Amino acid sequence: MRVLVAEDDDVGRIVISKLLSRWGHEVILAEDGERAWRLFQENPARIVITDWSMPKLSGLELCELIRTHKFPHYVYIIILTSREGKESTVEALGAGADDYMNKPINSPELNARLRVGLRIIQLEEDHQQAKIHLLQSEKMASVGQLAAGVAHEINNPTGFVSSNLKTLGDYFDDLSRLLEHYKKLAGLVQEFPPPLPNSLEKTLSDIAQFESQIDLEYILGDTGELIQDCREGTERIKKIVNDLKDFAHPDEDEIKPADINQGLESTLNVVWNEIKYKAEVEKDLGDLPLVECYPHRLNQVFMNILVNAAQSIEDKGEIKIQTRAEGSHVVIKIQDNGKGISEAHLAKIYDPFFTTKEVGKGTGLGLNMAYNIITNHGGTIKAESTVRKGTTFTIRIPVNQDKNSS
Ligand SMILES: Nc1ncnc2c1ncn2[C@@H]1O[C@H](COP(=O)(O)OP(=O)(O)O)[C@@H](O)[C@H]1O
Ligand SMILES: [Mg+2]
Image (cartoon, rainbow, N blue to C red; front, side, top):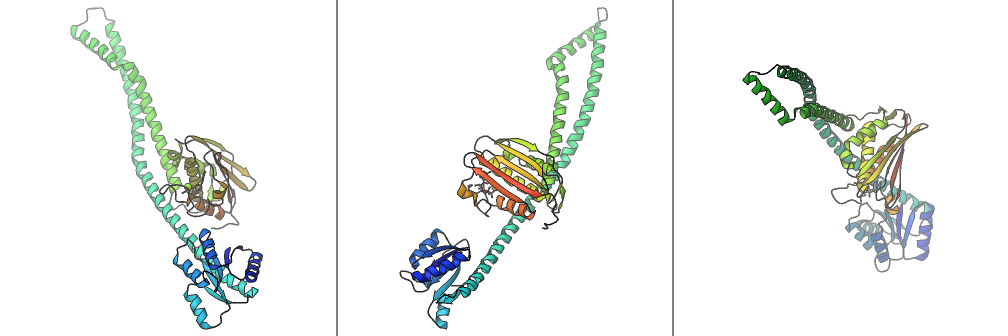
């Protein structure tokens, strides 16, 4: 935990700093209140231990400053003083301190009081995580419901268009065959020795003229193909609708054996529109055992990573998807040759709300969600990246979930 220590007494400051480092904290030292405030603004600590009487800015003033400014996290403040008496305690707590400790410092006492602070910080973090989780699941549930609803609505008309096209195809075959008979008849009539009756002559020449006007040969060849194309189109719609249903089923939230490759394929279909103008997709899907998992949640992970990959590509690039079975795990790699992630950012990509995208495009929740889902499956997610070269996400998940439940 990052702890800021503000203390003008050199010996006192060094003693506290040594204790904190020994307990594994990251320590920032300030020898007066003003410097402490500056350091704090640059890099807000989660815990502040401050002496009461200091030059330039007192501990109480520092406390009040911290409390009147908004920081993303709660700051736990402990005031140190040699003042005795209830009034001083009341004054310190009144200024916004959480705790109050008399000097000289007693190491077990400081440790115990710090742990109180850590508990409160932990509570705040749990609360924050729960809020994010709720936000995400609400969003996913509504997107899921919407998608499943739309899929259902599209299914119906696609069904009858597809079945009508089949009938239309059959009718057309019959009509073409009938036409063949008529053509044969016209040929036979023309072979009669002249003169043919006038009306017959006229009808035959009208037919011949109309045939060439509409280019009958071409129509006969093309119509069959048109109908076939339409049927392929409806098959594609059906497939997308199915993928969408698979993908977004809001109540499909139970653990079951799933085919990861198929999950990737259907996710890819669902986000195809985001990807197709940006990247060629190369798939190298190995033989995988069925994986015990929450398939719907894993699809969300694939979607977030695939969309990020597409968004990282400026003009036109490539996304490679590879899956492998490795012992008791499956490994999924998603690689792009987009703009990459700097080292400083790489440490933060899983933080909730961390985004480098413009407002409206990024929420900074995608990878946080991915991280939570994968760790809940007892798996790991790892990113390697080189700026301007690209990024590879590697996900490992256990095939069996016996030891993981949630
Ligand atoms: N494939 C990638 N290439 C480059 N940057 C990425 C990639 N994936 C994630 N990032 C970085 O990580 C940040 C967080 O990603 P994410 O949690 O999905 O949020 P969002 O996409 O809403 O910004 C992104 O804003 C981006 O800076
Ligand atoms: Mg994203």
